[in-house]
Amino acid sequence: MTTSLDQLKQTETVVVSDSGDFESGPWTATTNPSLLLAAANKPAYSRLIDVALAYGKKKGGTVHEQVDAATDRLRSLTSFPAASLPKSMPVLSFDKEATKAKARELIALYASIGIKKERVLIKIASTWEGIQAARELERDDGIHCNLTLLFGFAQAVACAEAGVTLISPFVGRILDWYKKSTGKNYEGDEDPGVQSVKRIYNYYKQHGYKTIVMGASFRNVGEIKALAGVDFLTISPALLEELRNSSAPVPRKLSVEHAGLAEPIPKVSYVDNEPEFRWELLQDQMAFDKLHEGIKKFAEDGSTLKGVLLKKLQAA
Image 1 (cartoon, rainbow, N blue to C red):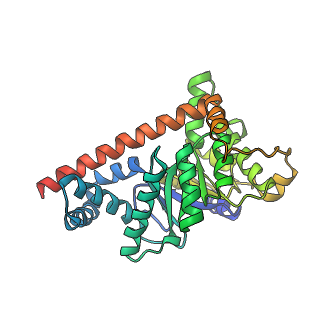
Image 2 (image 1 turned 90 degrees about the vertical axis):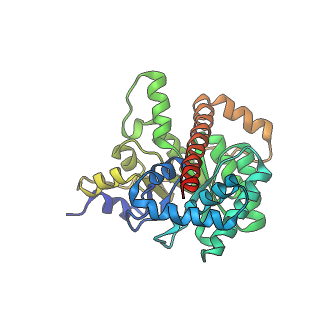
Image 3 (image 1 turned 135 degrees about the horizontal axis):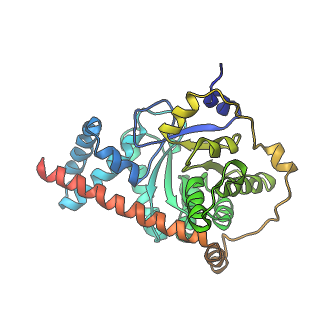
C-alpha cells in the first residue's frame, strides 16, 4: 500500500529533510545554527568536526578567526551527500552589506570544494535588511537565497518582489504563538500557520511570482497534509518517519489551478517602501515577535556552536 509520504510526493510537493543529521537520507537538507549545534554534539559526526577544525587551522589568524572559518566549513559539510536540489545555510543579520559580503564569502568556500553556486541557497533572515541583501545578491551576483524566519504576509510579499529564489514560512512557530496567545488548539485547515502559507502560496500564484514557497517548522503531520501540493516542504526526520509508516490518504490541497479559483488577493507592494514594510510588520504582532525571537535564538545557538568548536580547537 502506498505510504502517506509517497502520496505527499505525488502531489508534486518536493520533500526536504529538516535535519542536522547530514546523512539521514536522499533528500536535500536544510540546516540552521540550532541544528548544527545539535549535530556538533553527536559523536557520530566527530569526523565532520575534525574536517572543519582542520580547515580553520589552515586558514590561520586568531583563534576566533579560526573558529569562524571552522564554523563556515561545518556548514558547507551539509552539502554531502549531494542531491540535485540546492542546499541551505544560515546568514542572519540586520546589516545589508555585511550579509552580502558573508554570502559571497560562503559561495567562494563552496567553490573551493567543488560545489557550484547554482547548488547553494544562502539562508537569510526576512528582515528589511535581509530582503534587500537577497534582492541584490540574486540580481547582481546570481546567488540564490532562502529567506527564513518568515511569519508575516508583508515579509512574503517583499521577498517575492525582491526576486528571491525561495522563502521558508515557519508554520509550527506561528501555531505556537497563537496557542499561547489564545489558549486554543488548532488542527488542519484551521491552523493559523497553515492558513498563512496558503495565503502566501495563493498570492504568489495569482500574481505570477516565481519564488518557491517551502513550508517549514511543523508540529504535526496534520499541518503537512493540509499543505499537500505546496512547492516544497521541509520536514523533520521524526515526522518523515511518521508519514512513511502511515497509509492514510494525503489528497492535494494546493495547486496553481486551486489558487486561480480561490478568492482574489489584491496586489500590494513593500520592497521599495521601508517605512510601510516596517509598519506592516509591527502591526502583525505574531510576525514581529517570532521574527525577533527566532533571530535571537539562532544567534544564541550560533554562539554556543562556536564555543564548542573553540574548546575542541584548543584541546587539539
